[in-house]
Image 1 (cartoon, rainbow, N blue to C red):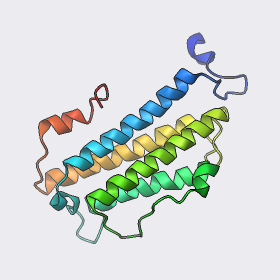
Image 2: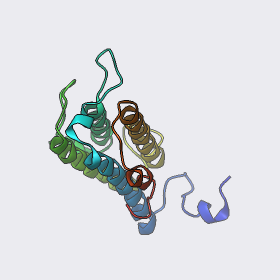
Image 3: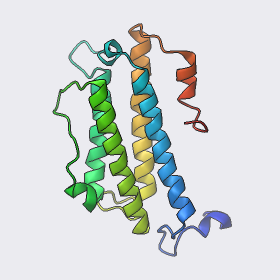
Image 4: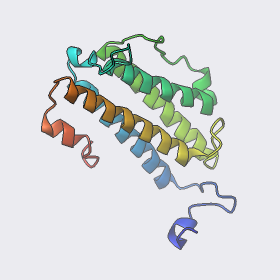
Length: 177
């Protein structure tokens, strides 16, 4: 059971009550997560984007980031009528995009997920195409991206691409991102 202070944020059927402050906190959490991904991307050299630990053609760093973008779009289009009708940029399977292409695409998919957050919140947290609702969806997306950022950092470390300590620790400094 939820503590009394949190119970007041839910309606009788468990959906989110309208609270503009809570909506903005959800959006800000998503935006910070996106800025973490962009901070990592901006620190990468072109050579680092092509780093991989795979010996069998697995994803290099650029394709891992393209995958993050594609997963965002999958959920954005699944959960939002606005996003379903938009012409969002996709990467072809196996395509290795440039840093500039990745930044542009990630910015677009971050905005699309923000649209999903806002539409779902306006619908009491109900999210078409994701039956568990808005909060679990947002948790899933942030966890998914965190997994790939960790994988990218490990790939870079094991392939000899040094990242400055201030970047590695700065990715966790959400108060300043």
